[in-house]
Image 1 (cartoon, rainbow, N blue to C red):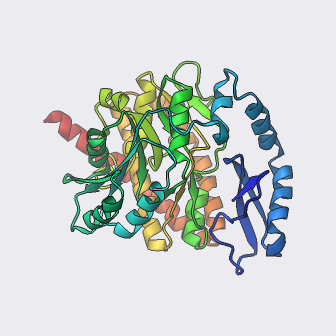
Image 2: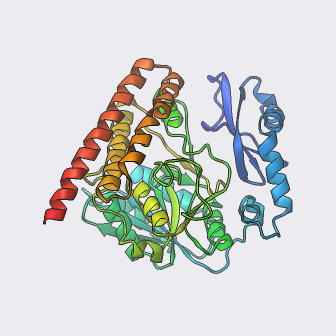
Length: 411
């Protein structure tokens, strides 16, 4: 990363500088806010900092200028001016935040996640670890060890498998009205919660605030495929969404999957989720739907008349799967979750058949993303296999959700 205007070091997005890489991909930040990426030759490393700054001022000239202009208006009434620059965010206004981390049998990743959360600059704060249907006590041991030194951390267990069950348990356990969610394979920025809180403070009507999820590493072909196929960390403009004055121009709005953010990085007002009945237990990792619980919640919030805000400054880092087998399982699960999400929209008659047909016509965009991901991973054959797995997952997910939905309704 590089912070323009500050005497800071440059760290390539894929981690510490490596001599076996020809190119460096660098996240450029101004006053701590991410504004975009630049890719430049790594060699010579001693001039990387200066070359990155020079490239940013050319490639990212427009967003940098926009940030500087809005930053000068930060004391004004414009919402975007209030949320664009982290330097303006209050460290705390006394509003507490509960962070919920749902996990299952991944103690090593969890420890790293919690250590990052402990560096959060926001107070008051509590960190609730939800151990979902564990097969042993490894998670409990990690949490207990860290909690001995940090009373903000506490452990709770949800015996029913499924990410939605775990999220609902975390909401019930949280003591604060604002509840932030992240995953055990995420590293949060120290100012992550400060940015989320600023989103709620800037818009009292906001029921949910989301942020970007950037790639922690791009060393393997699998990581590069995932990064290109699911560009969670590429949107750097603050946005607001609702069903009235803040509508997206897409004909698929508000059903376009992924437009609002992702489940690895979001916060909610607890009351808003309670009014919707919580997360759908049929969706999410470990449940029959295998995913889609985040997309489902974001959409239900919008359809219920709530407002959702997306803040680039609320940045976190995701550890992608590093090998082909793990990536294939994840891609299939994502497709499965998307299929379940779409099936629910049709069964609840929230989405018309005409909208679904238009959605299908947009598949060319998805195919383009898959092609680009294959090129990024240096293997078209790998890309074709993953694309087929994802597409098959969509069909299976839709069929499985349809059967379960009808079965539950009949009973």
